[in-house]
Length: 179
Ligand code: IMP
Ligand code: MG
Image 1: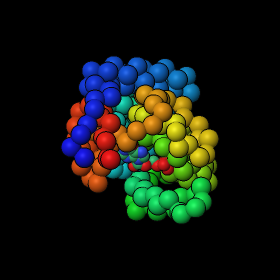
Image 2: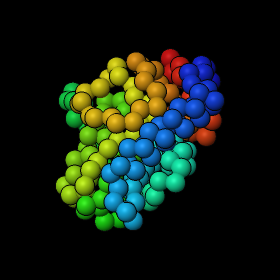
Image 3: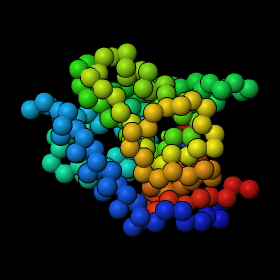
């Protein structure tokens, strides 16, 4: 796994995240009541870098942060994943506008699970931001409201994305050749 090809540079990521942050701010400025804050919910561990950049790209939009930690295990021969939450949100989300922030949507099962989990708690809205939308293995049509980059396939590392807990801290996104 020493073989990596650059897919999105640090400069491209910065420009894209800045644009997404502006878009988020413009949308929520119209929606949030005076005194109300957006609640950004990051999915640990992968999203922590994207989350840090995205919330800072929202300018003066009032935003509060919270995190969940999820692990998903693909069940054999089915299109379902068993998702285990090892850290829950700590804020009350009833009536709140929630923006889920995730590193990548692959099968989509993790995000699908999390959206359902959050919706049961009666938020005012749930939207989703992902750094990367990876299409080839999508199994459930999860709505993605803010997408950094779209790509067909490939195993990515860097900018929060890991391979066996390695490479998360690389500032650019690379395709790792695992073969
Ligand atoms: P899914 O959408 O339910 O398949 O799960 C998405 C999760 O799988 C992400 O949160 C990542 O942790 C992991 N994942 C999927 N594709 C990649 C990748 O290309 N690199 C690193 N992690 C990935
Ligand atoms: Mg993840």
